[in-house]
Image (cartoon, rainbow, N blue to C red; front, side):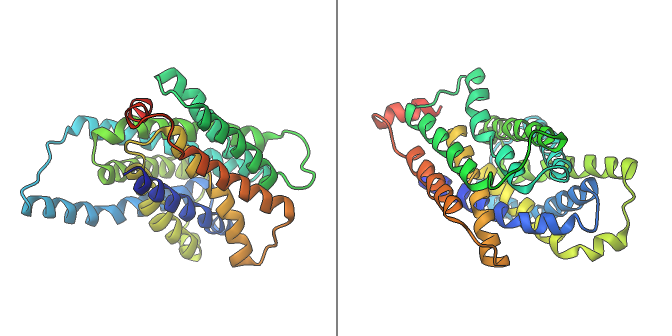
Length: 301
């Protein structure tokens, strides 16, 4: 079960890593709020037929679970609010800083998650803390290439983004065991999309022609990055230690670099390759069981 969840989270990180290309291309046509509005609403629409067929299948098999609709709606709203804030801080922040610094600062949620988790009774083994340190070193070598100056407005926005994505991971960790993952994901996209749309109309000038010009990156970001990847995140995080989950999800930075090399012909130097190797080593270390099976179950709960 743990291996299956880890693979789902790895697939999530892969989709997000490739989505950086689409995200960058989409910003050439529309504003941050408009882009996030479109991608989130598309993500919600993609999940509606899936929810319909899943419910029909459960009725045919007479496996109709008792759902707490209040918990589902509350969880969807909380996840959607966290996603709205985190994704838009990221969209704005990346405009004012380098891609390398943005990737490193955003991925700092792998450190922030266990720190915030301590306040909610989430304990981590020494191996996981070691994996966190390795991941930070790997991310630094991977993303912080060349001179990039000091801290600017974009760096501060990305730091806020990292904190918000940490909150998003912990909120999912809290609500995912109590609600249907696909329905929870659909509601969070609807909430994030509507809020982004409202702010888009207030502070931007969204035009249909601009969205049509950016239909390829918007469609990929909506269907794959939102509809598929965030749902896989919610399903994959069930029963997983949130720190381990954040370590696996942080691989999106490594995958983004690899996608740039494979799809765009961008070259990796020795420092970046070493960073990728250290990152993958951190994920492997985080998966090593500590103590007995019973002790691991207690630690993860």
